[in-house]
Length: 298
Image 1: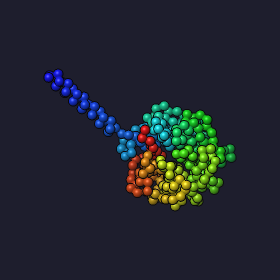
Image 2: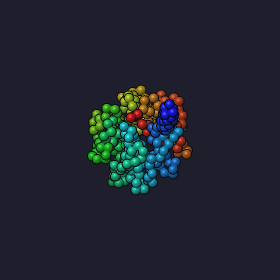
Image 3: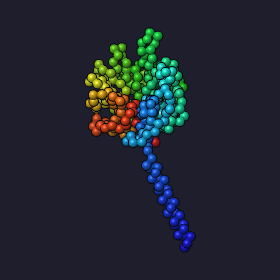
Image 4: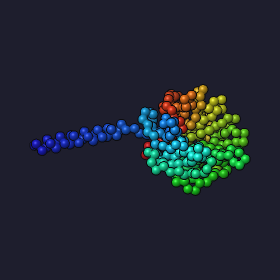
């Protein structure tokens, strides 16, 4: 009987210990938002949870890092980092904890930015900007394997901010000779281009919703950069933010019900969150920008 009591006490203590461990695990932060911040005195990439209450810095590069993009499985992040006194920007990948950092592009005196993963994670599209020998700014869109191999310019399109649709097409902002930009969509090889916006303004940074039905983007069509949404075919364009500061770089929540975006302030800028219809706007992260919301729960 004595041994039965001892065994009972042992099992009780063991169950309490397991419960405490599981309880601690459940309380540990789930990092689902990657963003850039100058908090350390240098642009670095941080991770935080949806509420913006817990954060961790995952880069440490003196040249600066930013413009994060999660891989579809959530295991990697693509981003750009700056070199050569910020004259060269290069695309990198790293594990979601900052480990295994790898430089993928190394074109000198060119600005590579805005990386975007294909739906299956095998490709990364990115924007490249530079001045040619005549000092004229060139805006190109490139694509490569996710390990950096087979880097290829999509020559039939120009602009920036590429983003993949769920069926593998590209949404991007097209550049025109009169310096305005419009949101367009094309096949991944640059064929079958369809212009989705038609204004005299700058339309930038498109991001397709997780269900593939809508596009969020930024525009100054009403005199100030604000966040807008539209259907994937360009219909039902709607303005969501109404501020006297620059709002930019929207990113969808995994279920498409919310958006996070950057809002410029005198002290730099903050990240805000709102419902996808523009309601319930509130500050989410102080001193941050270029936020990207993890779209998978894997």
